[in-house]
Image (cartoon, rainbow, N blue to C red):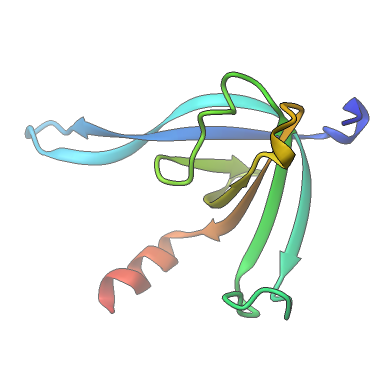
Length: 118
């Protein structure tokens, strides 16, 4: 992987339970790791069965490291240019320990309200 292609910054956040001021457990996210990446995007392509025209699928390729090897889609999310992305899948690029590709879906507050009302 050429360094010149790692031209964008991403922040990985890890989900964790916190207590609010009333002692209730609430889910939140804390910054875990920040690094440079290569970005490739796909909007509503026919190749993806589950993708509709209004969904944004984006892939972030980062260098392999001890920090990135443990990242999964269950506990982590990515912040890129102020937008939040849920990790859909993780591709270890043939387990060569050079790079990892995170396929992500854009997440917004409107998405979470639509899911909770259905």
